[in-house]
Image (tube, rainbow, N blue to C red; front, side, top):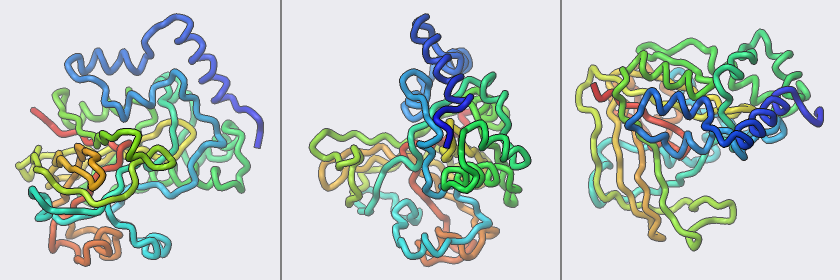
Length: 308
């Protein structure tokens, strides 16, 4: 692998320029101008440029976490047996208990300003050029992850689904406005812990949580919510998708060690067109179209809910 890449050179230049001028980042300014009354969620704020330049060697090699409804559970997932994010809708009530692990699904990356992100190709046809830009060996695990992310983003949408991969914060904002209007509520999973209950990796370990209550954001079947999932790539890329007949929740939880979580969750009411071998059905011992499928969101994923 090359010791550097054009992407890292550009990011380094931007970091020096921003720090030297003490100026707000273009992405941050765009958010403030578009949503003046809505602070940037921490999950997105953490991905803005200063101090967080991602190098190609740091691209995660774990599978992406896109819940594509047409796909089936892999042999590796079935062996793992860790389905803690999936649950049934009737489990969201005060006092019920769930074994959960709230973590990030990708390594730390950085949002590129839209002007920079748009200058880099993002398509399978340009894959050799992309790998060369990142200084990645085409046979490396990191290269395979880059290819997987791009091909997932280019895969056709499932029936009743709209999808888009945002390669910048600005493009995510624009897509949310196009689909949901400019008065959206934004939900993220927030984990509040202290140093005593952090694991070696800085994350709270998997444990039993008690549901303290649930606030349902959407009740109308025809309304839409949009979920954006952080992907493994050299810079921040989010796979965003909208489906009808969904309900978004904020679920207050308290862990066995006292950790408090304000968890974002989504329930899909119509699963009739999902692949019968989808991981959710394996986890819940259910069949397509029989029960709503619900899942909590990791800390680095976002839910947008129309508030119009």
